Figure (tube, rainbow, N blue to C red):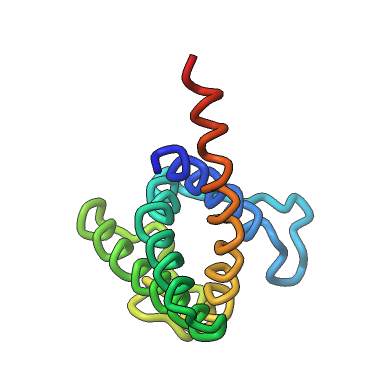
Length: 145
């Protein structure tokens, strides 16, 4: 699971940097500079111990994809609230404070207009999870002399 934790952390960082670099307002800043926070690596890595068991349980239970997507979106948004609150308590601020950027947010910790995005991300993680589970033994074999 540690290998997948690292992979999810790195993929999450990349995803966030690309997302923050996408043009969102006019005039477009053609530098397309993106950013993230060091805090985000372990938060994205939490996909391994938190998301993977949920995905496996929902698949084994035969839950249809729209319901799975809603569960993923709610879970991601709940985790965003919890980790944002914890980081604010530990560091004095939430790194992704949505307050100045969004009309529909909850205390700046999560954005309700991102629910469809998290729905899609949760469903997109399903085949990635399955692929990484198959790939992990090969990665372990390559890392161990």
